[in-house]
Image (cartoon, rainbow, N blue to C red):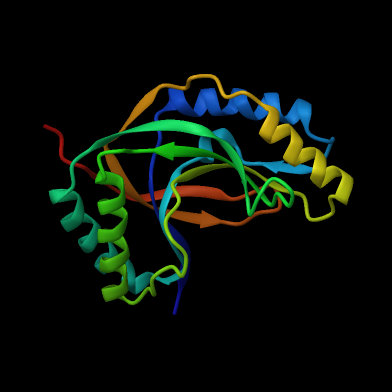
Length: 195
């Protein structure tokens, strides 16, 4: 049996990716040198469901489910809403930009995907959905002092207005882990409904 490492996400427009790249460069100047592995800006996306190692014979079922969901899901606007760290700024492991979508469309879309993927054989996430865009991850070899510096840099960096962006499609994406970082390939895309 062959597998691909896969996830479902909302692709982002180049204008937002360019702005996120500029934010990464600002943060990179403020954190201790070598303490963060930054995500390539073109690889930043809003993950809706991580599937992990996925049997290739399951891909048609996943795509059929996503096609059906997209046929009834409306497009929506996303607003960038600050920076933060998981699990927190005292022990930063992931540096992120938060997203807001007050109409509830994003939450309903993510829930529909979660439910459809459970039917296909992927168990639901144990934690709640927190929409965010990962900018970087703390280097495993970072010292306590470096880790503290990362948290301080993230909490003290003012986020300029990155504007709203239209989330108009969902995608099934393949991820290949390499020493230089993950490489992403879009396997299929499904447009959301516009008015």
